[in-house]
Amino acid sequence: MVVDHAYDWWLNEASHVTRLAGVTEFLGTLAAPLFLYLAGVGLALSAQRSAQARRPRRAVVYRLLWRGGELVLSGYGLNLLIFFAGGNVADLFAVDILQTIGVCIWFAIPLLWASEWVAAAAALFVVILGQTAGQWELPSWVAAYLTGTKGIGYFPVALWLPYCYVGLAAGKRIGRGSRPMITISVAGLLALLATPLTNATWGYRHPRPLFLLFSLAVTFWSTAALWLWTEHLARIGPIMRALRDMGATSLILYVFHHLVGYRVFWLLGWVRGRSSRGEYGVFDPVGATVCLFALLGLMVLAARLWPQRRAKEAS
Image 1 (cartoon, rainbow, N blue to C red):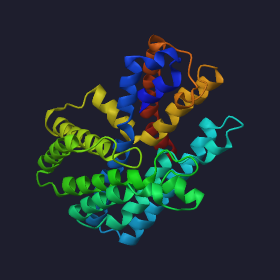
Image 2: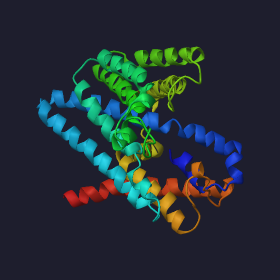
Image 3: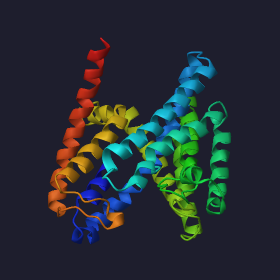
Image 4: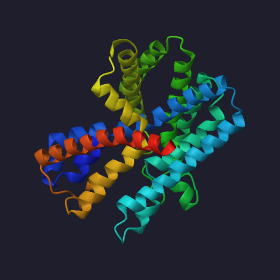
């Protein structure tokens, strides 16, 4: 996500037709699926811990309703803080990834105590249902969230919710501990084998079924590879500690990289907007790469310092 955003925001117009821009844009398409998948995995593991601790289900539901609402409000706050430039009022109400994750958390609550197979079946049902979303007649503010047909809806819930449900099923399998990575690896293989049978033009809008299958294959195999690495191969060195810290402060870093990489650069005149709107930055690939490593360094530092500050405040 950070790499994709950085080159998208910072590269000048001529550099946007280079192979580097194409590769980073492709990698960036995998970010949102991973976010929603990991949200589902986290919900499943959290529900399992709550059950082991014998927390009341009502308390779990209330906590997740609150967490989803926090993400929705954070998304709108980010729109105002980062993207508002005076005349683009519509951008204030855009449904971006934080709002979508928040709503998907709400939709996942009824499946928290269902089996992994029910969650997987729900994902398949929503995939099929989502392909009809362009025909739904809904009020504008609902359509922006569910179908993306009105307003600015970058991540319509009807199309992105399956990733959360798949993550929920995977998290339930991981929580049970019965050789979960074999199941997840096989699921990745089946998803990949199904891609040649899928027409690239099928579907209402992104993510279409072909991309859904491909991105799930990548996601499943990434899950298995990281599991193998962390459980059996890795030693906790500086890189693993940095990744762990960044994962634990992901929401803060999400805001941070927007604040620095977009808003500060915009104030300096280095960013003019988004390339999808024909608004480009001022850097060539070398300059953008230097800025990217500087931003990543700041993010690693922020991930290390933020928990320490919170710990001091708590004490």
